[in-house]
Image 1 (cartoon, helix red, strand yellow):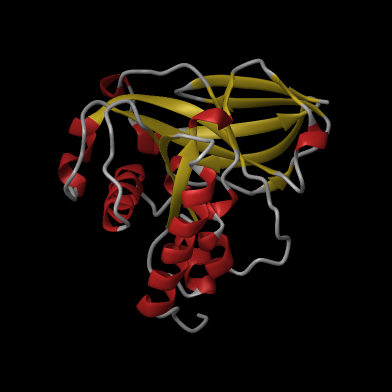
Image 2 (spheres, rainbow, N blue to C red):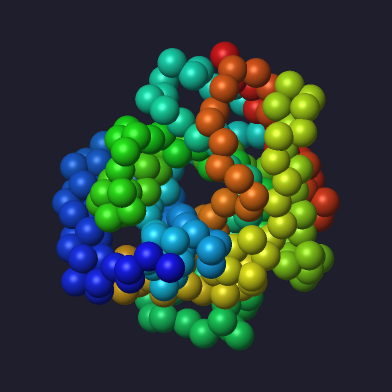
Amino acid sequence: MDKQISSKSLTEAYNQQKLFLTKELKHKSISGYKAAVSSYSTQKKLGLLKPITGVLYAEGLVNNNDTLLLENFNASKIETEIGYIINKDIQNKIEVVEVSKFVKAILPVLEIPNITKADANILETIANNGFSSHYVIGDAIPPKNIDINNCEVKLYHNETLINTGKATDAMDDQWLTLATTINTSIDNGYSIKKGDIIITGALGNILPLEIGTYKAVYDELGTIDIKVK
């Protein structure tokens, strides 16, 4: 295990994130929040005790079956994730056992972060809002219809399987990861709004975004298709 990052260093990184967002939010708006580094093994490697968090931009929303232009990105990645639409405002931290009560729907998500600093360490990643950029959403499904921790996903590029993941890749429990993401965002001075989307981190591997067609097949959440030119 790498040396644990101090709480002082993390606080400073999140303060830098707030300064970064002060500029970004002059021409963008918040649509939700994201977790990154959600796997326990990667957290240990990086000296973290929980995922890092950032803000999702409304302007970064991409609909299922849309087309993206690779030239609009610097060094982007593609990640299979799970998203949650929040059904009421959340101003105070919540317990894991109650987090499902705040979920209106669950949906498949492909996150496409834009890595503007290739050699960024984890503190620089926090300061740069986790390189938040775009995210593609599929159809929303009521949570009562899904045992979300049993969900698995396969990602295909040009019809070739390139990644597999499972919901429990994120802290072994999606509900724990969701509650942690919400609570960390609240600790950082945000209040979660009704309609916000929370995404809980990569399932399986994080891969470079390339030209071609992508299909993400979630066994309980449906599919997402996008084209990259």
